[in-house]
Amino acid sequence: MRCAILADIHSNAAALMAVLEDVDRRGGADELWLLGDIVGYGPDPHRCFDILRRFKCVGVSGNHDLAVLERLSASGFDPDAAEAVRWTKRQISAEDALFLTRLEPVVETNGFTLVHGSPRQPAWEYINSLGAAEGNYKFFKTPYCLVGHTHIPMSFKQEAGATSAAPLSETVGLVLGKASLILNPGSVGQPRDSDPRAAYATYDSGSGVFRLHRVPYDIAAVRERMWNAGLPVRLAARLERGV
Ligand code: ZN
Image (cartoon, rainbow, N blue to C red; front, top):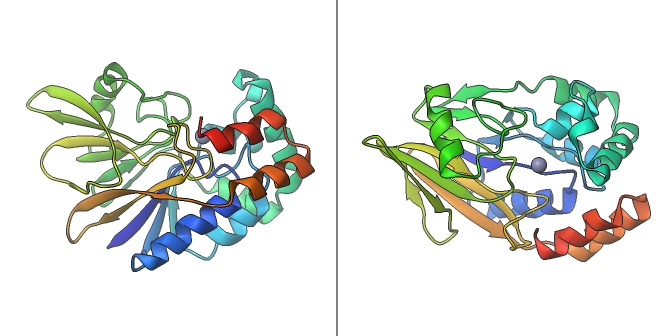
């Protein structure tokens, strides 16, 4: 089975389309695995759902998804993110909300545990350090775990009791083996590793290869749509810098 792994789309339909065209160029995918935060920040939440509904999706919910559904308070969000949550609530259809309500906090599939933040705290915790990764290993049972939330592509490996971390690179495919891994494919719609190109990963269960990909898209057009929608200016500016 071939799957494309997408995290933190954040209502960026232009980035999502660029990613899906890239998936197509690489031979397509049987399933999309979604690691949460379909909405929030960006200008096209409804369009993102229209696109995603065309695919077989296996997905988990993120903190922004839950805030839009009012299942989680946005009081812990920064003011720009909270403003985007309020704006998003007015944009999505009942069918879009239904898509979000069907997402679970944790999903196990094909040897992977899928979560947004971490297996220990699916909605909130950032796995952004060796300590955070180490603390989470006892909270999943599958060989591998996929996370999003930090918007930074990263891999953590536990082998013979030792944990190590390495950034994921688009030039090197990872052949998944015996070592237990926590993998983050970065963010489709709002990368924060100083590379503004959309990030996602593919996994082929036949070859066992997991690979990161980066895809350019028209950021200026998205910035303009955010301005026209009246979304906070700072959210548009950070897209260009990838932070
Ligand atoms: Zn996010």
